[in-house]
Image (cartoon, rainbow, N blue to C red):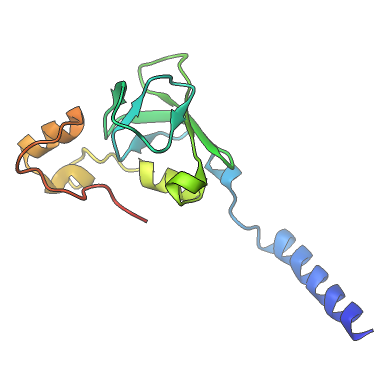
Length: 149
């Protein structure tokens, strides 16, 4: 009897939390709002970009505006401003990235333009910014520029 009461209280609590205090979910990231890449993203196939982000193929530079962002349990789909009709899809394999897809999204994208005066890139020199945007490794460039969660 006591176990049944505890179960009932737990069940009612969960229902009230869902009704009164909706919890954020991945589907809330689906938006028409523009986002900006915080890191360079390399790809060979726009529809299948592995989140391990190997430095291979074409590049979407850090600071690129993206639209129509949709985050699911294992992928992030988006369109790059100026590349109409092309849908990019980052596939998250948590065993390799060691993070959830929402964490990966927070690592890769920002609502703030990182190229603005006080954006993420503002602390770098002009030469460093050029190397970052081109995805180049160069002597004198600071390491660990990618924010970690």
